[in-house]
Image 1 (tube, rainbow, N blue to C red):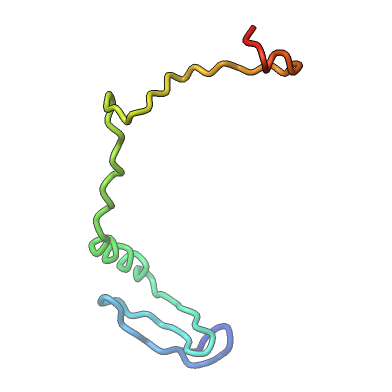
Image 2: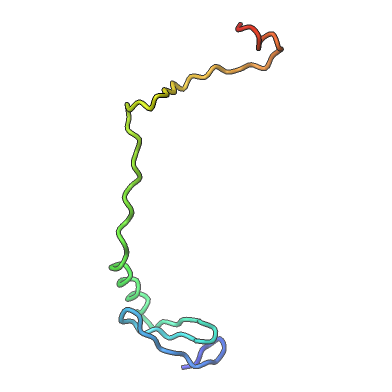
Amino acid sequence: MKCPIDGTALVIAERSGVEIDYCPQCRGVWLDRGELDKIIERSASYAPPPPPPAPQPMRGASSGYEDTGYRKKKKRGGFLEDLFDF
């Protein structure tokens, strides 16, 4: 069979028990009916397990700094407000 793009003779390779036609010149890949489904099925069985979830910080654990979430909003004003706490 010839490559539909450049007319080079296709090469047949076997990957995981599935015959794949590919062009050595343009590196195009052509699959017959059902071959994509076979590849997907076989790749799912070889998939690595998902990574473990990231550790969550412990609630109630003291880190030495307690952020209460309260911050006094600083108003834009004159230099006197910077010197004196109104």
